[in-house]
Amino acid sequence: MLAVNAYAPDHVAACRNRIAADIAAYEAASPPAALDPVFYGMMVMALDHWFCHRQRSIEGKDGNPLNEVRVMCDSIVGHGGMLVVEKGIKLSPETSVLGLEPGATILLDKEGFRRLADAFLDELERRYC
Image (cartoon, rainbow, N blue to C red):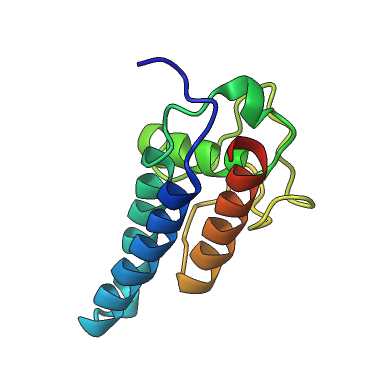
C-alpha cells in the first residue's frame, strides 16, 4: 500500500469514538487492575494500526506524539515492552506525552493512554487532515 498523506476528519472522529467505546466496554467488565497494562498496551497498538500507513515524511522525527506511539508499538512487539527509541527519532522524556525514559517498561493505565491517544489524534489532525 502507498503511504497515506491525508486522513478524512470523519475517520479520525470514528477512531476517537471507538476508543471511548472500547474503554467503556473494558471498564464495564470490571477487570482486575493487573490487566490494565495489557489492555492499554493493546489499545496503543490498535491506535497505531488505524493509521499505520501514514507517510513518515509528514509524521517527522521530532519526538511528537505520532513518533511516541510508533516507538511504543515497536517496543511492545520487538523489545518485550521495554522502551527502545530508534535512531533518528528525537523522543525525549522531557517532551514526550508519557515521559518514559529509554529502557523503561511500558505499563500504561487509562489516564496515560487517554493522554497519549488524545495527543496522537490531535497531532494527526494537525499534520494529516
